[in-house]
Image (cartoon, rainbow, N blue to C red; front, side, top):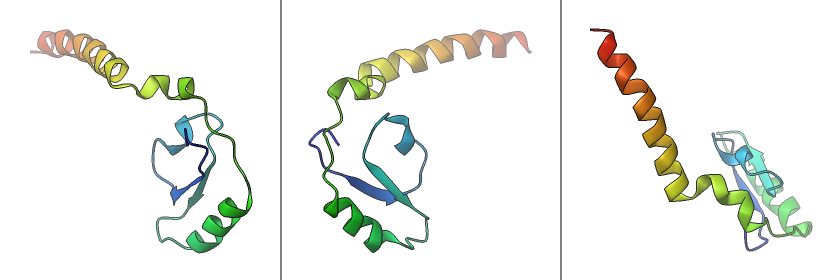
Length: 80
């Protein structure tokens, strides 16, 4: 996506979280995969700006998990 290449994949969680990404999704069965690839190759796409991936950077994900864990652990210990 950053290189300006389209993506064709089965519809899974996370694919639609990158705004403006040139992603075509097909059912998990793969029906329509070849047609989606052919359409993607026929239509030029622009590269997705690098800052669109900011929320997926490892350091940001690590901080968010740590914050969530910090919220959950104290609550879990007060339940006993």
